[in-house]
Amino acid sequence: MCFTLATPNKERIKKIVGEHVSIDDYTQSRKVSGFEHPNLPVMLCEKPSHVQAIRWGLVPSWATNEQAAKDIATKTLNAKAETLFQLPSFKFSAQHHRCLIFVDGFYEWQHQGKFKVPYYIQSTQDAPLVMGGVYSYWKGMNGAAMLLSCSIITTPANALMEQIHNTKKRMPLILNAADWDIWLAPTTTETNVQQLMQPLEEGLLQANKAIDDGVLSLF
Image 1: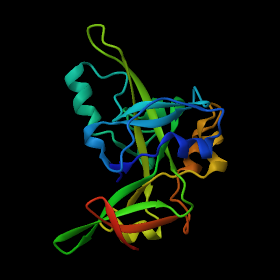
Image 2: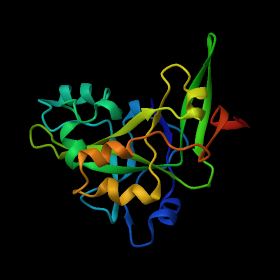
Image 3: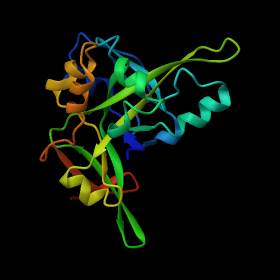
Image 4: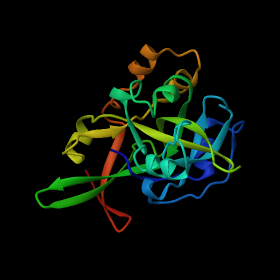
């Protein structure tokens, strides 16, 4: 799964999306947990020339109250590609509210007997990774502001991630630049979305052992 990330600064995002894209303020972090529900830099299909700060942990529009929204958000940090168009929390978003989520890298833990060894995974190209996600609007209770929140999609692991995430063998959906517009386009069909939700090809990621937010060695 994907629960711990590093977020890039605005300059790194600009390098891959272009100067014409506006970027909201958000807190850059070397290591942040999804269970803290941070704001992530996200490009919505509705506004492809704007990167917004959006809360991690999707709250579907039908959540009945604040407590229900809070409970659901802890369970929707990730959305499995295999059930994205089936589960009530994600089905509408999969059809109409897809997004790109920009990260510098993500952390995963390898099980070695009784121990769990942390790894930091990033691009081999010294550039942010662009993850496929979904988002939702939820109208808060008692006049509260509209909440915009997102979830990161996961797929089966590729060969590298099978060695690291060696129990559940999952990885986040990472999209190549050639697929960004297709992912965001409102005309993209469910079949096309399913075709895009595949493990990233080999050779585009590198993994390093991570100790106290630093890295020790290349995997």
